Image 1 (tube, rainbow, N blue to C red):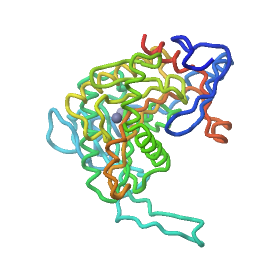
Image 2 (cartoon, rainbow, N blue to C red):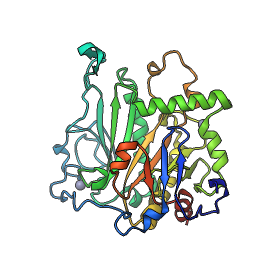
Image 3 (cartoon, helix red, strand yellow):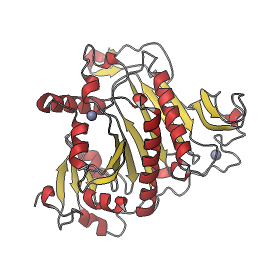
Length: 353
Ligand SMILES: [Zn+2]
Ligand SMILES: [Zn+2]
């Protein structure tokens, strides 16, 4: 039986290998694994909580972070004071720091290549409230956070040393969050990461063969199919065909845009609504798992693709919600092939509600 022959819920007995079109990555969809007693549960770190009394992201403790980059404020116009709704600060322990344009250096006859670790590492404190995740925030507030992402992306891409900007959120200890207070990170890196390159090349190949954007076609194909989770006027949420993780969800803009910074004000509201829906369904269906949220988009400098104006025509940004439900273990590390115990069509049916 092929996946096209499956029922609405995609159920059948055995396992199936599915290949992701863009990465070429195989995923082993193995529903039998879900029956093992301890193999499939939402996992939670015992505790990562820093109490409100010592949390550097709580309102009133602004002096404990580096001076803010910007903030949305209802009350005080004074930087680094209380009265903000969303606040952006440099990461106190940055993975990368600003510097001059790096030049690659090959060592020892070219076997070992390195670059200085220059770049940008910022933290968006999503809310002054220590305990309110995105799912608990009003749609308008989520829109404000997304609006800040757009502003930061526009600012960071002015820096000619940055080639790719990664926005990501780790919610919960098993997702890698070191502080409980809801926050999102922005990393501007001086290279185009390999995974992004590989996807660009698959997208370009698709555009050459089929004459259009892979994602615009995907949206059309999946619109009424068993992997749709929610369809809205500006955005659609889908379970990817080769989902790596249980309840993995991708949110895509209907309008073809390569970079998140091109999102309009009206689209930001639609996106905020869609994210709130997706995250509340995930909480209800999968027992409030830890998760990652990652933005996937085009490189920000055209230097990444000198003289190739077609980049905008075949890259289409998306947000991925990646629940942490079971650990990535030896098989995945050894092969790059993920084992997912939840059939994506079943996940979509559950998330649709
Ligand atoms: Zn806090
Ligand atoms: Zn498109």
